[in-house]
Image (tube, rainbow over all chains, first blue to last red; front, side, top):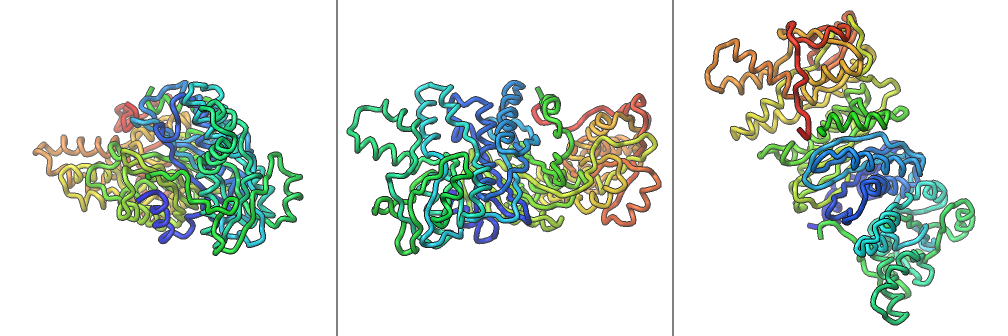
Length: 302
Length: 302
């Protein structure tokens, strides 16, 4: 059983699971566990690990359109190294500060493999779910896609400073707050745009027609892929786009809204907002430039 | 560096750490990570693991005198086994229901060792800290001590049903709510009564004179230790008491309050409340029947 099958099993039994965060009264709450081997490539600093792990939970808060209130982390490492721990806490605190939340500490434990579990709590009286996309709405993406894929390449080539920089993303909490009044459905792109669209389609019972051209590919991904063996322009463009669309771990927001709301929202955003397609009826399926876009992306446990 | 040194390091840099839960406005928030090898003896069912792990976080909510609002868990296992996962979720949900909170799901991950991280959020406008104990107050303990120590013995002898039963404790959320208006300081006994007293003493800058006789030893611990090789009564009594006082993992509440508040509070409690000693000035130290009570108990990373 892979993670999605397991989550589906849980959803059968436990209503609130299935959105980026659970909703309890006016709170949203989300938790994530990350491990050194699968989530932190060699060369990831503990500062980056603190930033990124807590950031991943804050991104789920953002995806509900909520204010960031507080975050905690449970930190387990083979030994308690003061410098590492302090760097982790600094990263965790800095990402909270960046989005107006408070890092309030956590638990410490010994474990063979560096493992962290982060939890964030947000507040909103009007959360945005994955389930409200309406045929006719446009599909929008904040920021750019492919930044984490680019980071991975930099880790592999040993360009650790740039890799760590790319790995620290700003959770879209402010954007989420501004999108919330207009968005009909929203989630984050942590499993990749392709998978996010499939999840939105399942929750909203709709289809999507996505256009290749406006997909906001991060220049850092183009730059890192240019160093790959020479290939022709079209093949290169396809390869970059595929990575940007399927790699995930980018923590941008993917949302739907009426087209006439876009310019109003854009004016209040600090990041870009790209219209990448349209919401269709469910029987239209999910297409990219008219071809079926498979449900491909990152799934734990496969 | 052991866990306490590491936590002390964090406290230097991060104000809210140091109580059983962090306080953010009217919320309290706490997180714990547990691992199969160190926290779940062979024979622990996944139902018990779900109950106990989420219960440990709810106990921290109780220790702040807060209402239980919601809990989440990040669950990592070598493979996603549907029955195990479902049993874990049932246990997690049942312990939340038992204390009036809501289990709202979590994260799933693969990991070599079964590992869970649980987070609970509670609500209170008037949290109880570790720092308010006043000389002249009495020291009280809810319920009984030694239940988890007894469970461990049962796991070792293969009496798994009783062991699992003993391992599932009811977090003292209701008791915490009723103690809160009277308690001057409070925490849970998860590291053992001895260590809890040292932590309360450090936070409140006080001493304690504890009496051996009223310490509420759980009958299950006496029963399990009676099967040990025959020893005389006094040695037996000492051995049982030492286990009850130092073993920890019991998740009872340890609190201080004016003596005249005790009968009032007792009348509203569903569990027992034992007066086990008195708060003294700091220079009196921490004694058990007049002898120094060492800071002995369970510390991760030692």
